[in-house]
Amino acid sequence: MAQPNDKVLREQLVVLLQESQAHATFEAAVKNMPRNLQGKRPEGLPHSPWELLEHMRIAQWDILEFTRNPRHVSPNFPEGYWPKQPTPPDAASWSKSADSFRADLRSLAEMLADPSTDLFAKIPHADGQTIFREALVAADHNAYHMGQLILVRRLLGAWTP
Image (cartoon, rainbow, N blue to C red; front, side, top):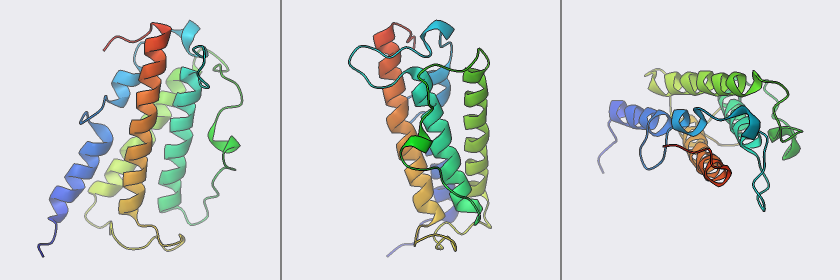
C-alpha cells in the first residue's frame, strides 16, 4: 500500500482549513456583518450570528490548545462553548472575535505545515487522539458552523456572496 506524501498531506490539510473548497471561507462568512444584526436570531432559529462566531472561535481555540498544551482545561460542555448573550457586548467584539479566530487558525495551520509535527502520533496528554484527527475535527466543525452563519445571514438579509 502506498504511503501518503507527507508534504502533500500537510498542504491539503492547510487548504481544507483556510481556503474555499466545498464551502465558503471564514472571511466570506464574517465580512460586512451589520452591527445591528450581529445579535439577532432569525425566527425559529436558536442562534444569532454573534453566537455562531463566538462558538466557532471558542471551539477552534479549544481544539488548538488541546493539541499543544498538556495543561489546557477545556470549557464545560456545552455552556462553555457558547456566549452567554446573543448580542456582542460592544461594537468591537465582532472584529475582536474574528481576529482571534484568524490567529488561532493560522497557528493551527502552521502546526500542520511544520514537518517536525508528527500528525499521526497520539497526543501524549489525550485519550488516543492525534493532531491529524484534531485538524479534521476543526475543519469539519468550522465548515458546519460557517454554513449555519451564512444561512442565518441570508435569513436576516445580510448575506452578499
